[in-house]
Length: 246
Image (cartoon, rainbow, N blue to C red; front, side, top):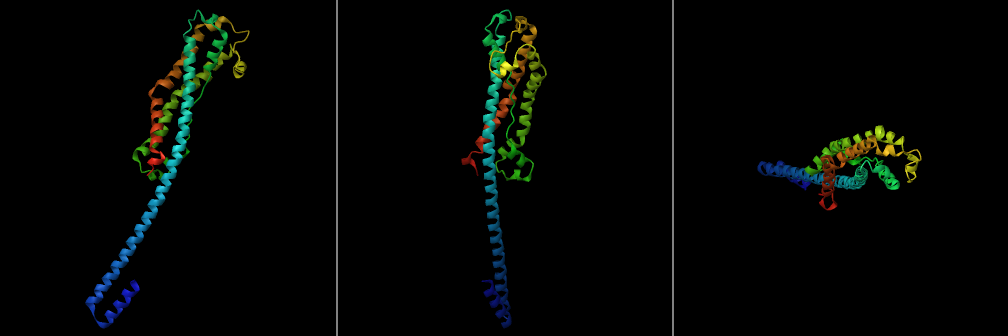
């Protein structure tokens, strides 16, 4: 088309027909501009298609990661409730009666307070997004904000878990190690041995150890941080559902 315009323009120029020459010259320029604009538009379409494919892949990875995080958090919280509920069962026994309580049941209750799990979420995809310019590829602004705040939410929640963990390893486990058999705990048998005396079970120190253990776990499961983390996981899963990908 442009070659034909060029021949016509040259013929008009040789004939001295300046008016028609200018018209054909302008037409040629317009065609070139249209061609450039179409090429740019096609390039933009291709770029947009590639970007949306990348976004779809990221959303898929994020969704899978947070399904794992949902399952892990549920498991960890279940263990925290196990500790809390069994500590409560022990504290519900009057101090004067605990020495005469059923030792098998008491052994089970105490051993269940030794669980010490922490939430360690999968977030490699989130980290790769937040640490690079690729984060802008996500078109959902709410999802962006949730992912940007995710790491801080987890840190706030884990502060309570680390208080419980530190207490367990620094004080709780060493205290019980003087009075019960951890080998029996590992073998799921009665943790009391022949040297365990009733004075230990009736002591204020024993009551305080159980009470403080329950208190630090209570802070994990009933403070607002856990609720925020749980709700954030659920919302991220909603926003990354396959039928919501744009």
